[in-house]
Figure (cartoon, rainbow, N blue to C red):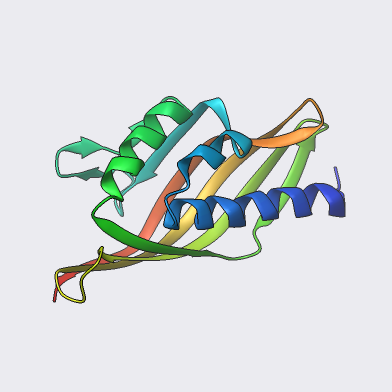
Length: 150
């Protein structure tokens, strides 16, 4: 089923907001992007659930996702850049999307410390509810990751 330009633009705009709001720690805006029942996982290079500092990167709600990243980003400054995405409308109320992403992170407020960079793809399901589109699920599949001390 062809995707309308309007639907594609709504989803692309919300994905851009997702990146900007995460990078600027504006967590309250995610209620306009993600469903409360969001499922999110990050997969490592070998396809397993990513584990960092003992934390498995899989969450079963928007609230749990926001709780984790709002705490983690208190000490890290990030920038996420996505491409225009490959969007496929599979039904009137469902769109599958794949967005390429490059991300950088570093110690907040310092030119020294940790620097990380990586890339991968977000594989997402977007759901139309009450006339608007929301991220229902996201699986971020890492292709590349490097961490350095500066």
